[in-house]
Length: 498
Image (cartoon, rainbow, N blue to C red; front, side):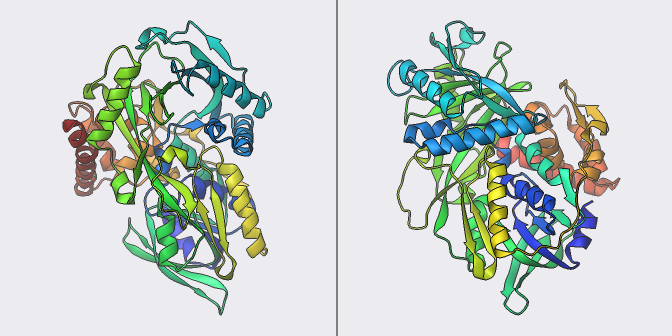
């Protein structure tokens, strides 16, 4: 699949090149392919490997915006959430949440109850009616005697990374080309033929790929500003960054519903979300200035989350209860002149779109799973304004049939997963991390990213590496050694220093 796409990338001219294969780029790729555009999508790492794989997998209706009285945003996100529930039932499912209110302040019972009813009203009563529960299954787990304020949202059923991938694999036309591990290097706009001449580096084969496109859409997430700067594209907006860390904790059998706790500061909350055999606990909100600061969880992040876990639950947790770590960087949109130092929660989560008509370049700022489809439609309309002509490629749905995939059971997990060779054939899988982290949930549900607490799954991962290397034992050991080194760096050493 990937080699065929590399060959197709160098033939003819594309209508549009999308830079970035996170939730925004992937959903837009699907949108433009369905419209009959000839599209190339390039991602410098794996699809969905950045911020898009580090969410809590919630499809929120904009409850957060009630605090700033931004009712239009609440209405818009609630409508997007409900449309996803209705039209994407195989991916997005309604889900009841328990809010455990504080005893005093804005997050106490009375104001939160009022807010939840207002939230229900703005969403036109399409979700279940909020209600108060004095007794509920999780009550015995909690550190204090709480009532539960129950309200309905939605969540992604499989994983956020697979949700991103399905936008790329489900809708393919004869003019659609998607390449992961392909990094944009240089290029220029030619006034002579009115197109961009771009070159990218295939990081798997270490080859240069040159192609032409009539328009470029920058969906690079946290890297958006750097790419715009390198190609001389001005913008009235920029990103500031918030690092979010989530712990995958051993799940309490009694916990059936996601729970939201007040954190006791900044009117912020922290969530506990059941997901398979674990519970997701977090996230943190840490303002960072440089992207490189946000790629890994730090001991202080873990200590902070364990501290709040002890505040909320009757039994405190230790590092031995941590199964996995999730760390992502939220790109928050501000004006280019912004120079304040605000708590990230005070900044808008809205997206913005800018257009440089002279160079046929569109930039997308911000990212939110709930609004991915409406954002893609908005970008497509902007593209129509600057590039009304299209090559009218015939579009058809050719999704990888996961139901007929070869499957296997990983030790200790009840769920069956598609085999690594099937993912290589159908889902752009190139590395052990691609498979364990984003094609399956193994690295999130099994300690030490699938290796096991005592490396008990090492031999199984060695066999997977041999499949990846297509029987080459030297390359297989290189795959395995690289994966073990990354686990030691981003998991073992972090927890050893907590």
